[in-house]
Amino acid sequence: MTLTTLSMVDRGLTADIAVDRCVDRAAELLELRPGVNELLKLHDRELGVQLPLRRDDGSVAVVQGYRVQHNGARGPYLGGLRFHPLADLHQTRAFASLMTWRSALHGLPFGGAQGSLRIDPADFSATELEALTRRYALAVSHVMGPRLDVAAPDLNTDARVMAWFLDAYGNRHGHAPGVVAGKPLSLGGVPGGDAAAGRGLVYVLEAAARRWGLDLGAQRVAIQGFGHVGSWVARELYVRGVRVVAVSDAGGAVLNERGLDVRELLRATAAGYSVADSGAPLQRVAPDELLTLDCDVLIPAATGDVLTAFNVDGVRAGIVVEGAAHPVTPEADAVLDARGVRVVPDLLAGGGAAIAAYAEWAQGVAGVPWDELRLATELRGRIERTFAEVADFSEEHHCSYREAAYALAVDRVAAALELRGGL
Image 1 (cartoon, rainbow, N blue to C red):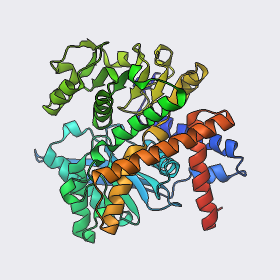
Image 2: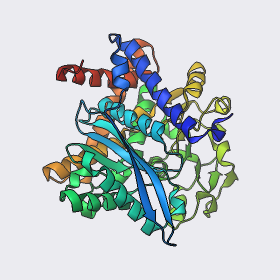
Image 3: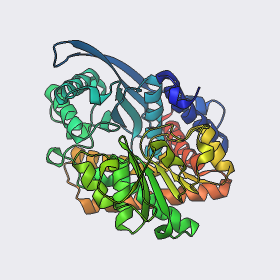
Image 4: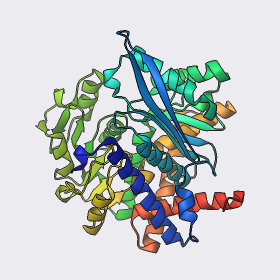
């Protein structure tokens, strides 16, 4: 059975088990006393909700939703809300714990959470999606709040969804802009927040190039996914003169060895077309083929579990930068490590969105506005500092960047728990 045929439970377990393995390995590197790793893998709260929806045609559907809060030792929970047909409790647990470790790694005062609705948003109208979001917000509102748990956009959700969530929450608990990140600017969003995930990844790539003595401008980059993260990565690399040779989205994949015209791709997708339907000079390739193209840097920025034991042998990139949550399975990660492929884990490369969420939360709680320059300065500073810490730990302990990132994060959460008297 390949990963492309796994059930929802199997896919969720893949991510859940992989994160737990990373925590166990971090505990070994840190020589934590026995049992601490098991405590750090526990989740503080798991909430399942069933949301009835009267559809536009008069029929009634019931949608399963979740909100999982992993560890609040370092502050309020922070985590995305995703709409996806493969969302389940195991996957939601994994992403909640990932946010705990990502926040700790980047020095943010949050624990980790994750929310999900098990739907394919393409099957629902905008009116139905709004109704579902509002029902979900009310169903979980008793465990949400600026000092409790902060929601943020994730796969298939955006500023509009966050605005619906904010309004529904506010109708019951009063106006609380700090309960949601990723809001529209007119409702308290932070300027530059929409670009932060992609920009943060590019800042990581720039720091890596300096550390490894590489000329970033000479690298050929392939990006799987041209959504919220991938499109901004492509845009930021393009303005730096870096060759983006291939990109993909749900409609297909395109290749140009001399470099794609990213501006044309952005115009096409803004108009509602796929990258495969743009008018730029390009060659169409199968979406799965993008992962094994001849390139220097591969950035999986779409969904999880795309590099597996079944396709990793075909990867020809020397550097893999994870732009999605858990895109490389443990089996594939081991193969890449044995081959000497440098993997920058999502824990490190995906910090931009969390840093932007912190800025927006701080703005909402304190009532002091942030501007785009302040966010960009905060983003670059935290990213570069964190990358250096991970690289230093990796070299000192002769471990991978993934192991180093988890070790630093686990150490910080364990220290917070001990100070609180929880260990």
